[in-house]
Length: 536
Image (tube, rainbow, N blue to C red; front, side, top):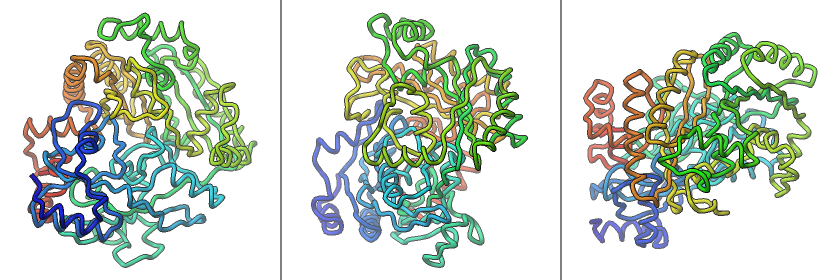
């Protein structure tokens, strides 16, 4: 139990309204998209760095663990639920200032409460030509939270942690530390160069529990003069390895620039429709039969082939773009079943951005695929991808989606795969075979992040209100992770369930001993997110 004396001190620091002990609120915060048993002692919401520092100092004095979250929209990975029991949840949503912005150098400096929607609106108010690297999260999710979890966006800046610098964090003793040149003060150099001089500490605050990030600088892309997407489809899964090898060759030769994105049929369809319960039965109907029903009985069938991909091309003008696409099209066409080019000029991109800001969506039904793809690539945050969490729900998707409250079951599987057809073919077979076995429907995307590696982002989805499905999903998830690791495919990002599985299995290697030594040195009372990424 948290002592009343600590609660009173926290109320003095952050204000009585920002210390939450309401059981309903806490119960909601203890709920994610899979089974958990960890309890939350109370919730605090500091409004600035000073309040956060003082709160951590007090928690340290009382040896009470704290678990920081930015906006808590980490659906499928654990949401707001701490790894350790009886923690104080620190919500950073009130720390939502945009503290710096530079149009020419292409960056903003933001606090963890800043959402994708907030930054989008800010850029439109500046009439900026800078755009976000949008993710598959909600418009209310945190840019900082997504970046330090090494989340994936869209386009050239899809590797979001590689496009941030100037990290500022509160340490377990309450001290504030800045990475790179930020240690010298608020100079422009700290916003444009990641490393500073000496050892780089940015990575210590990514996927860790060494401190609480309070600010970072996010680099932004500039709108091209002319933009094209080469979209393609593949009907036969057996042809995927050859296509992957071709894409790798095109990437390594510089013909196309990562990120290259591909989606399987279930990933596309689960964002636009729900499981066909009228003719299929979860757990009994094979996923291939489910696909046939969706394709034959809904208007969404034509949207998705077995694999669906796109390559983005930025050009200085239409002529330049046509040259690039003609070469890419000639190289790619023998390896795919369908290929088409979508194009948009800068003027139309700016108009689309401004119209969205004003609430004008226009006709998005006539060419839904073109509308969705372009809006994604020019950095318009949308809630559409969240619909996939409702794939197996028996109820219609609500207008206001909250996958935690609505008991949507989801777990992400996120292995890194070498960029070769052989390795991708093997990994996809593992995922399909195990997911079919249970059976769930494997929703998979391939994010070709570099010329050498592919991030698989796969999910299994279920209805948490159906007896037995939580347990079945856990078994599927455990077998998937174990089998992928046995074949050398390790996750780049983990769920809290995965973290707890590793802790129970026991980890003792030089890597974890090194991290534990750092943790013990800076956090001897182990108060900041104990157990996160198995750092104890």
